[in-house]
Length: 414
Image 1: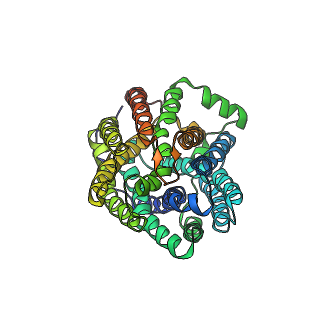
Image 2 (image 1 turned 60 degrees about the vertical axis):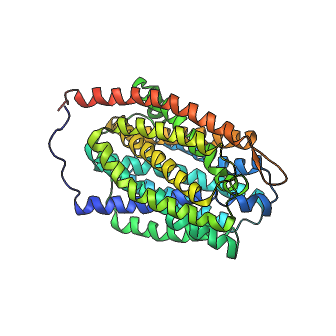
Image 3 (image 1 turned 90 degrees about the vertical axis):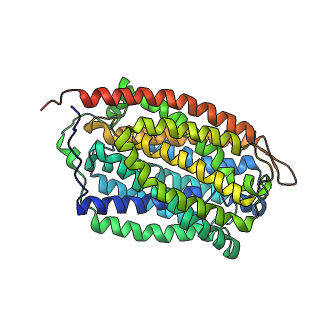
């Protein structure tokens, strides 16, 4: 049955874990997000097309998706801390490669390496959160972890853009790799082993464990919802900076301010939305956040030359919707798998998300066409595609919500 007692406050160690995972996610999110505002620079400096840039974004996603599948069968057979450190180290090495890439081909190779390791980190982190925090507190935890997304806008992206304008586009990647190295040391020293799941002895092979996880019918709807959850961000975000500069008329020098103000707004709203999802229901927050995002995206993608202040206001509203969707859906998804399947389920979910996102980014690069003037054609088409995918996601997430409700109400077997 569901626990109706007031939830207990976080212990000091739980607070530490939330902080550590938030810092870790900050580096992972920033590594992906910094490529988007650099689009306006890379398209010119590397002399590449929008399709090639979309491939650079999707290369990370495809390699991350493949590694997620390969790791899924082993994810519940190791201490989650050790697994986290192994893949985080690989992510750091790949990011350093990005920071020294001499041309487009090497950058593409570096993104593949980064994705092979970085794509698994989110899954392991969410498995750790699920192991250490009860469901009634996970919305709040996800709200704080989601602050990494906003912090990357407030601190990382503006700083990265300033550095790119002064020292070149390599410098943001070197910054991320340096910060990640410090986080790696913090995790190694402060995090305790996360191995309670190993007490559930299993003789099943990793391959059979993976196949069993994929074939479990209750998990299928969650996997389907994940496919469409990934579409929005991967389709619109990679070309957001280029759209702002070339279509909305925002100066490249003003982009850091747009990201910073939007990020500060998201930073303040994240924990509040997380607590709200725990209080009123995770699916309700997801539903209304999705509707808000759909409306705003359809407006935003059809804009022409727009005043800077209006772009900032509209961006803040969009990110409130996006943040509410990410927080509530992430918290709801953690309640789907059984204890013995958490690592595998999270890895498969991450893999599906990355592969779907990679396909979405590649498709976006083919749909959009950049004129010689820099203007991006067919951006409103992407808005329609994203809105339709969100409608499908609302229906699929409702099915996930109903399954979690039944699961939580079912009597626990002692």
